Length: 293
Image (cartoon, rainbow, N blue to C red; front, side):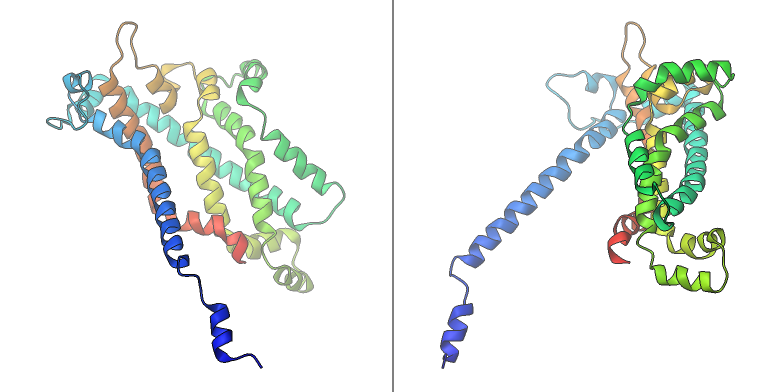
């Protein structure tokens, strides 16, 4: 018979196990902290630059903290570059409308591909994923020619259609995978009661998939807000430019106003930071709901 001492002795951890585990944990947290610092450093440096005076920006050795801090750059934006507010408004209109259109179309397509069974469904999913890998630059010549014939250059519908074509495939892929996590028993019960596929989608699947829709919508909104090549080509009129394109054209021929560009960039990314902060719980819930349903 095995003694109790033998049993407990077999489960006893080596003397150096605990110390090794502590060192491993410290190493993990050190790497995580370094990753966070490296990731946030450009944003922090951008903000610090936006509240520096011009002399501090070009000073050598480098002035890391503003001495003193000033909001003059933001005041200059309001007085010298009032078109920035127009750029931000253009980005907001295009990104918001694109997100709504993609969620409406992508939700229906994702439900069909994720919940219904028919021949060629997997092939369609593969083709959709392949379409999302096309670089926007490869599509620019044909899109510009087609939109020019349709008189969609320098119009909101033209850029919204372009962004929808770019980001609809990835939205369909994400939503179709998320819809597959909803229990089929609920859907089967609704079919027994005589509900149609569209009724099931609207009354059952859609309410249960709100976290996935929000996370997908946030991803599409950020992509559309930050998109550059298509916006540069389709919005050549200064009045219709989006924020990324408008800020990129701030530099003059013989000068590069870092202080103005930094302040303008902070104002441009501020809506993204606010939206991400407000919907943080929903975004995390949408990204993890697929494994918990």
